[in-house]
Image (cartoon, rainbow, N blue to C red; front, side):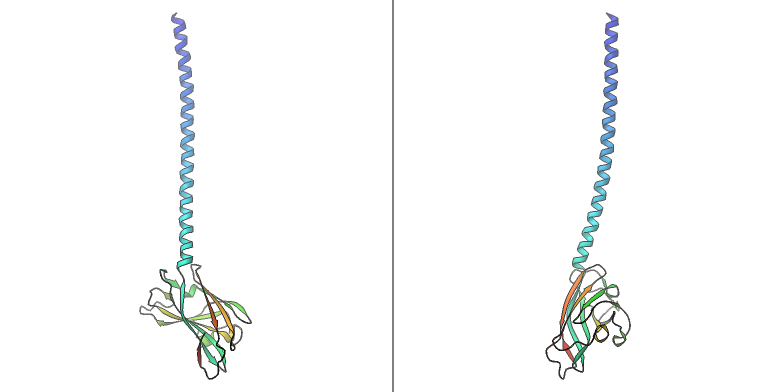
Length: 197
């Protein structure tokens, strides 16, 4: 009788140890899986935050064209001048890092910033000068009060613009935000030295 009882207790002990080993293995597997899930969730959260910030910057960090005019000589527009300001809700915008796509009647070019005088610009450059810049931050638009003039030499880019011609301008900031502007030359340029475009 004692031997049978001893045998049963030994059998139960072996079953209990096996169950304990399986239980510990399941806990370990669950812990590892939880760790992998937490790491993956953290990585995805970081990625989504970064993507959200970049998308927000592309929408909000843009310049606004306040006005535009062209310098006229011999009844042709030789220079296009844009007056720009920082868009509402934008961060600081460095115009020296911006690019402008010029899509004109004869030529399409991408222009980059140069500090040369407007008359000395070649066909792939634009100039920035301050109109209103209380803190001397040119060429960075860092307050809503800043007003800068962007000058492009149409004569060098393609040829002077004639009456009724149009140029499409696409200004892209360092954030990837895009501002588009269509400069339309008036139908008559006779006796004009400057015209709104």
